[in-house]
Image (tube, rainbow, N blue to C red; front, side, top):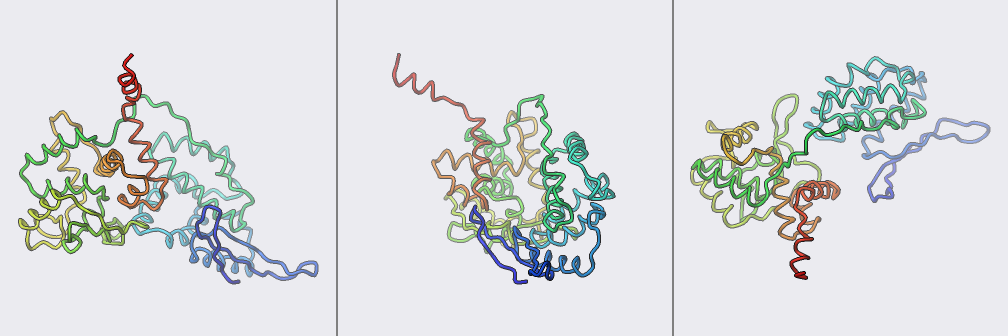
Length: 359
């Protein structure tokens, strides 16, 4: 019953085990399971399998709610508290009321397709949420509760976009214009906050967790983040592979130095006026105030990561360099941002070519 690690074709480490269940026709019989992303999830599955063998029950008659509760024990060990909290909240609001009481044996791809289509009409993150529903069913197939995943054939609903997708980052000229508006507030805290967001690309949770001890020798040490959990906000390590040391330009350092002189007794770089953590809602509130009745439109706070990525790509940095700078665990995430940004870029190759050959 030893749990063993192995390498998948994509290079990722996974875990597997083989469980002895007795002899059949004179031969030893085993149940094999593989594909677990962590050793802890493999161990949970093995323990559950031992219970199943010792106390066999028709698992196909269990409800989706019961399956979800079992899957949640494994999932909790694989993700951060904030991710776990968001997932459970979404399931409790959008999934369990619709699917919770249905038995596993009663699910069909057609019924789940109808549910998926209905979900698309209600929420923007339907694709991501249904992907999690698929994972719950994967848990059932992995443990042999059902023969096949009824959610596997379900496809995303094709929805015609009525309006053109809105750009969600500032290009160089727009960022210059926005930062001029920020400087007009004469508020060093606002100036520093938006400067750091745009010139480092860090996440809002990482920004709010920054302490002055993390700023030294023209660098920022990104080693923690503010996360939302059922008990409120807490400081945790950043997302997987997001620990990184970011170099800062001279002007950003000058602005941070001025901020520290203004608030010499602060512990965090960005604190509330009364001390303690700055409210996560403040940056967005400030952004709306700054852009109100101005030509430049507001973007999401998270879109300053895309803004920074845009500047990095324009400066000629490679995808791997941008991946490290933004703290992406997967290069695919960086490539998706690159695609998102470049689809809005003006293709002036034809004009350049025509000007070059001059006829």
